[in-house]
Image 1 (cartoon, rainbow, N blue to C red):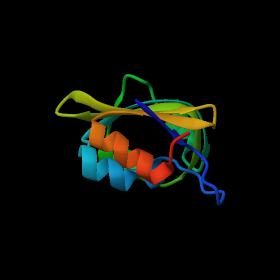
Image 2: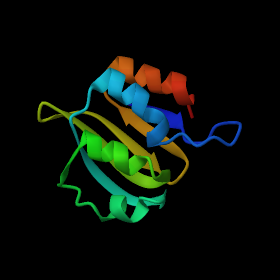
Image 3: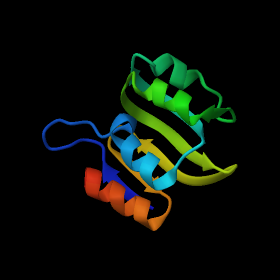
Image 4: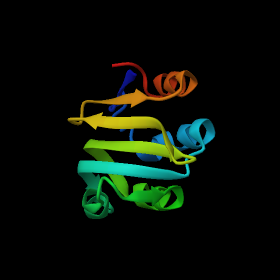
Amino acid sequence: MVRVRQHGEDGQLFDMPAFLPVVEQSLQPEEWLLDIEWCTGESADTLQGLSPEELVPHSTLVSLVSGLRQTIDGTYRCIRSGQPVAELRAVDSSFWEVSGPQQFEAEMLALCGPV
């Protein structure tokens, strides 16, 4: 597990829309389990309303996070072939805890920088 920044030096927010290219290339997700306690943006109500046990197709997640501004508290679990392969957890609008294959963790550190 690595911790990466949620806020860039230029005011940039590191969140799921920015993570998707790395996630898609490294993990090839099929589905997601989402447990979003608090987020902002057009799709906030939908994301926060999903059951943590409900499998969400990757294409649906892509649509939902296109309207996302920031995940303040919440967990995204990436599923491939029915198995969890990675987890991204936003902690109190401060940082992300990222766990998964070592190469994925390294790519996330390179994208966002360590805490």
